[in-house]
Image (cartoon, rainbow, N blue to C red):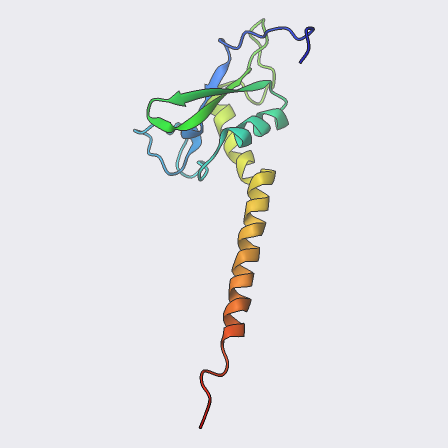
Length: 140
């Protein structure tokens, strides 16, 4: 960003904390979507990329939610134009945004890579276990 970049006022944008869509949390602890729609261990990068995929402006901020203080970050999302009309007609409300993000986060690239690495480690563990089997001692 050079001198030409202008400062954008994000104070009117919607806040999305990872806590809002975390399956591990209860609704009394801050989750805002149903358990069936919620995602396991979401992070701000996945939420931010999901908003970009939905063609919504978003900014990552280094803030913390009071009910989930040890998890850093929140995403500010611009849902409405300056005249008040929704940018994306399918996503007119905060709840609709959270549900759409819940659908996209499991398909995120970082999650896919993590799953592939996990599977590769499981396969290596199985093959390593088979190699160790065999002769247990020398017959006399």
